[in-house]
Image 1 (cartoon, rainbow, N blue to C red):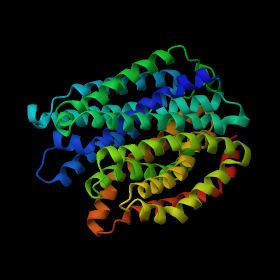
Image 2 (image 1 turned 90 degrees about the horizontal axis):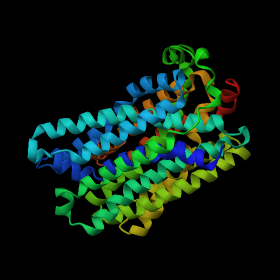
Image 3 (image 1 turned 90 degrees about the vertical axis):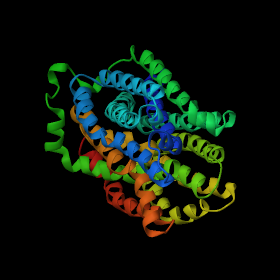
Image 4 (image 1 turned 180 degrees about the vertical axis):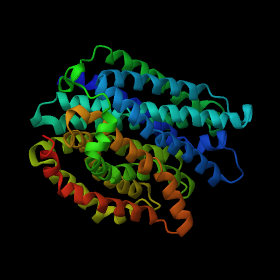
Length: 414
């Protein structure tokens, strides 16, 4: 697969993760603007709830885009998803605030996030499946890891743009109009991606239209539901760690640790770059040492080092917080880098989009998007700042049996 084709296929992932990262980092500001309350915790929780609602819509998007991807092709799914996502970003940027139109502003924000949640359900699935299918068998891990690289670059933009804005604008200016700028930029990224994708070739693995299954979602659920459950469980720690250290921790550092928003965004931006680079290495190593070996290294490392790394992130020194987040980022990079390749290899091509979409988006909806809420609730309920770490470790243990059986699971679908 050519570098140009990889850039074209992965460009939409930049937008997807840019938009959701921007929303996560701006959650404290958006909470005050769209869900005003005398209780800051209530406003923040409401903003995180909207983030979760967007992810909750993904299973519905899986049904829609899984059908499009397996029935009509990977390319139509990729084009439509990126355009809908971009339109949603532009609409949020134009949205009146609660102070201007009252509760209608909150309702409109929720509706837009639902539509975006549906549309992005097809992005990771269609683009990832296509580049893995088009890659040589000996380099699928490395080629697939470019999806994770694009996702993290989107996250870098999603944290870097707010960081740049906070450096030049006052808190009052950001609350008044500055928060809109990142969403307008998201619309521009969507247009760029759509233009690139118009000339993208369809996957050769899909076969002729006449040979495609008419009800791929139903067939996938009927014939491959154990694989879909295993794929979902495999992804859980990856999703939770990301949202814990980059979305929940950002608000925690500014709200309770009293670091500035700019400081929290700066260290997060650097560590997102680290995930992008380390993910490519993980993909390369998986082609040479096997998917199971690399994933097992990440899972065991998470279990051993999660508590010490979380302890570092609760120190008063910014350098120690940075090192703690960097350690989590290193292990998280492995899961993101190998996820699309492993998921694609666990199911046959004729149902690949449907199965991958169902597992990935169900995991993001149930575990990923809810992580900030769960972490916030656990800490406030128990009074234990380490409660989120126990959550991470428990879900990592769930994924271990699937990792250990991975070679057999992959071989059975070839």
